[in-house]
Image (tube, rainbow, N blue to C red; front, side, top):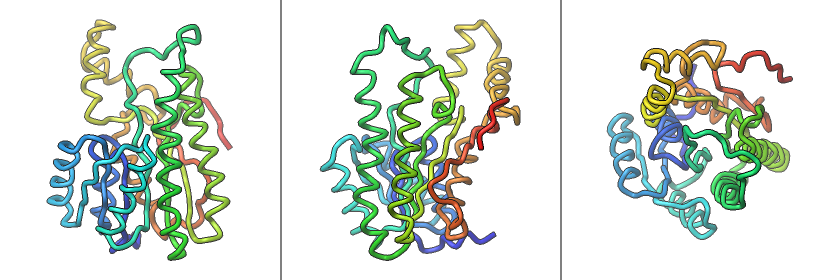
Length: 266
């Protein structure tokens, strides 16, 4: 299927690694020129060179901190100036999740909550606020927010709170922007293979005393397809949502974790 993305433009935050980089790659392979944003310039520039070489598209690295209003404004302005227009925003920048157990209630302090919410929830909102006027002006756009299945599960209080907030924000923005031709959706990855997965698996081997093969199997067993979902699997979903072909989906959440066992969502 032709996704009709040839010649479109996009910003992908968190685009130097992980799911963000995979999304930027997939969009570029579909003919999109992409501005990738992240805080650290060196990995960002390396990712831009790699993606440009692989896709033949323009990949613009823009250092930015989504926890800062001025940085987000400058990032969007730079992207629009470099690309000429803005069609797609993929919000993916967030505090990295660790392999350590979640913080229990008795130990939760403000420093656990505010940085996480500022980077992910307010960061996504900042980016959408700056990007939306460009999309509304041209009568078409796509905003895709990468959240997570902690929105549908207990076990990580702050993780659930931030991801539920992303879902609520998505639906509000979809209702406001939909009449202007701008669709807003949220994608919930589950446990996903990225550059950090090898470290996570090695930590499980040490802590649990299992073989690397057993650690892989345990991670795969967390979903119903019984394989670890790869960042590129998430990128395929995002590319579809970014496409004009996906006009029928607006304001809704797409679970992309390989199928959470037992739970029913409707």
